Length: 619
Image (cartoon, rainbow, N blue to C red; front, side):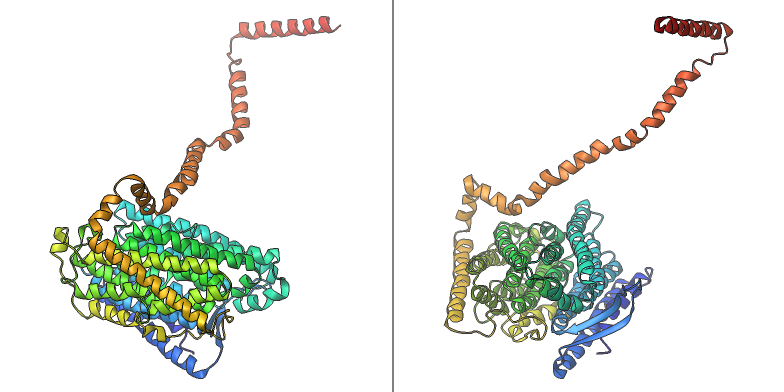
């Protein structure tokens, strides 16, 4: 376990080498540094994981040094390796390495490759620090690091103004959540006297009774931070715009790093949420609503990356639903499976985009399944896992577990929302595949598509495709000693079997309906959504239920109006009123100093007359 620091120091070293190269490294050398540093971190993680599981220890703590010492406050640079953090670093370094490897192909011919891989390595470093930190202060450092890296990478093509605004939006919206989390840290330190995660989980039930307002407030503040990072309602609007960055960035954000941080945070601090059952249920409710709204929004997108973005939002909603019913193990299991098939889908989308000369509008693609067989296979396998195709895909087993846990916990409404979400997932997934790969080629970019070649292009897609099948579902996170047992864990009776059949049928019905609509009734469907109420519904879903428009009118425009009102600095003018009064009096008195004797004599006579008049009247 002494190698544990290398898992995040290697990506950090890659960042430093790239950042300090000052342009001396070419694109190929920069890609090698970026890929190898994360690849070595993945090998170290595999070695550590094998020894950890083989040893059977529940957890390992490692203190590197004391960060600062102020009175009794002595936060450390300390690491905690247990089943949860091991699972997370496995996903981050393993899937992250495959994404970096694919990026070496994707970024060929792009400007600023050194800068790109420096930011990507820093992203991996920050996320590893987040999940390995044994205290909330170190976790928060990594938390802010991934926020910074998301800004840098989403706005990678900064010379296009829209990309800069997309990065700015992601940074600001996630910062709103971070403010809540920061306040939550202050509250926990004041109430519990520590920021060490293990001590928080130990002291929280000793200090707070179940339902205590302090516990509920702390849980709400933590949830606020998680909503921002994991793009859940109402702090979800940044995620679709995050597609402005290169496609490997989208894969890293959606599959291996940033959006999983909120799920990890709630699972890690489960003890606090257990003391606030109302807030815990709110987590599940927000997840259920988000997965439905995002599912409908995905149905009406035309950009293949935006479809996948809303799909990620929906799948993270499933994880929040699982957290909300106390099925922490199911949430992390789905997080892992989602990392496999969503990375596959995004990298396959990247292969399509590069091959079609950066065309990513489904309305201008089509007919590519023969021209791009590997990307097509990636979409089919990844899409099947996303739609939870029964028995043969990884997504079926993780999603089925979430639905069963919701039912076993007595939350039938949340389970029903999950089933509806599964139906929607099948519809938009099939629409995505058919619109991209079937039918006629609709543009010259599609007709002149050039399939990707080479090991760095094909190997990540093949490995992720294998992990997205039922073979990936054999990888079970070692969470027994870390997270509490969920209500339906280990129960596989008739009820579970029936629900599994219902879930499988829901997925198959959705796929069948999608095949009928998008293969045989596409023209009829297009005509129906072009006029009347269907057109208005399409517009609503295409604009993601109008949240951006509502926020613009309710928050952004009033704020800008206030800024314009204060542009003249009214408060400053009020403070300067005394100075202006003194200046005005001075100007008035200075006019009396003319230097002309007759004016002075007249003034003195007028003054004496006025005084005598006052004395006579008052006497």
